[in-house]
Amino acid sequence: MKLRALLAAWCLPALLFAQAQTPAPTAPANAAKSAGPTGTTVTSSTTSKSAPAAPQKTDAKSAATKKAAPTAKKEDAPGVVEGVTIARPNGGFLGLHVANNNFILTFYDAKKKKVAPDVTRAALRWPVKYQPGDEHAVLNASGTALTSSKVVKPPLVFKVFIGLYNEGSDKAVESYTVDYHGE
Image (tube, helix red, strand yellow):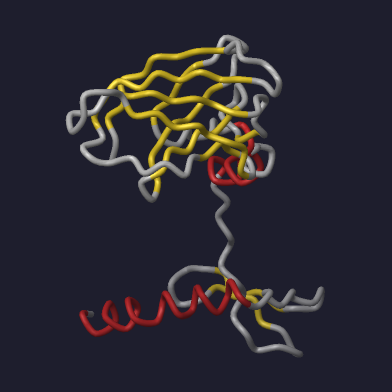
């Protein structure tokens, strides 16, 4: 009895896998049915000597999940703002971070997807410990963000004052004060 259980444990997964890969043969109309030794019905055919396929079980929950998966859009997931997140009055966001010791100011829409900057430059000012005055940097357009060539020295923990400007105007369109805690 133990040997039969052991053989069933080894052969059953292989048998189920083989049946899942190949379609089950259909019994012809003239096939003879008889009761097997275990009381199950066995179908025999004059043209084919293979055993019938086991009935496939369909799980309603997994079928519903498979049907619902293609309808879900991946675009609905909110984006991630890189660096310190700054909310804008028009519903968008700014992302301020330091990469390669330079400030990068990235612009995002209301769904936190990257967009082109709607200003031409930004001016940043932050206090430092190693000199009596503040450091300054002007960020200019570079692709989809505003970047500076000014090196930002660590420690990257300070209050930064940001002003956004349009071309030909000395008046700031927007201004922000942010507690920056860098990487």
